[in-house]
Image (cartoon, rainbow, N blue to C red):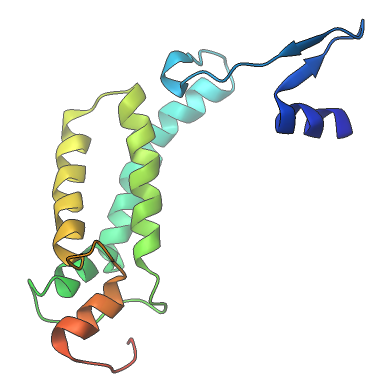
Length: 145
């Protein structure tokens, strides 16, 4: 365990013979995973998990919250927590990694639309926190529903 932690922190690996070798980071796009364990899971993530997660973000109002925050539609913030936005950002991050490895025009177009909604909800200085932005634009300081 200590050896593994040392390797992760320093990027140095030691062989059984005591020789050390520096590890070199490579871009994830230079790595091909073609094994029987991870490759099928990455395919499931691409074809099932990412679309499902975006669908859930829409069903729960997380995507619509950006339109409300941008003032493009009326409504109250949907969700139990003001940081509901972060779930959308996490799915975008995962989808971005997937797109880099497996180009998908339909997913890319969907993300472009979603990113435009997010940009519209941002303050001029780039700040975004959906419920806060909605309240500021509407001068409505009631709690979330």
